[in-house]
View (cartoon, rainbow, N blue to C red):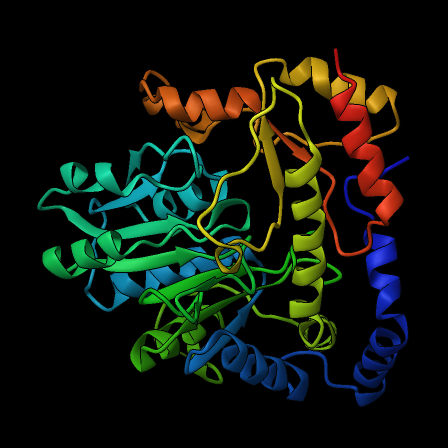
Length: 366
């Protein structure tokens, strides 16, 4: 069986260092907001290229705290609008609506699956306060046109960097391009913890302080509460594990790119659309999404041939039951992608035989 993602095998790559890190935390007797968290935050900020990295409980919380902080600072208020790609994971939308803000869905480019920067300006209104770009599947969503629009209309640029750790645009890492970014370290990410974990990166001192306070019950001083916050802190064990794996992130991304290149060079099936991108720096291949109108048939065929795949994502946010008010929106490009997308196995621990097997089986699909 070619697994979609063999997390056990990935963890085994760093097994000795991970065990040492976990034991160090256990033996320390200090399990929250200690030296491991501080070390990882410092190292991750340096890796991304920002002044601040604030560890939080998960990637969704990272995005939620960004918008909540902007509200607390008077930059936004409930009812304001945030432009967001329509074809994203629902967490991007949940973070907006959780704060009483209104998502304005913009269709993606059918070739790159990233927000179509040609459509953004017509969606901007006097109520627009931010553009959220989502580096979906691991590909950089930022364009210079987006940056220019943010300046022209005085909009905050928020990055959802949950899937793009290590991605680069013109020498700068995603997560350091906008005003602020949310990161997820869910176990299956390119930089994954052994449980839930997340972070926020920014160069804005006041925003960083506000986010950190909000995620600590609203307190920056023990038993003194400035905000009605929540408990959303990165624990010491996850921080220690992430700091181990951070050292190998670029190496792992390079291995993912080798798998992607083999797929791109060798999958020749006429019914399959392969990923398109501008250059290798701008994609870290968290996922390898292909498209076909025979998606469900192909997925079953691959499973019958011992190859696991996953659909990202079968139902777009605007068609979810929880967002019934938007169920009637017509977003044909988004819906086409969600109806046709299938993610092939890709990871830094796939063998050459695994990758070749996927290619051979796909090319024989009738």
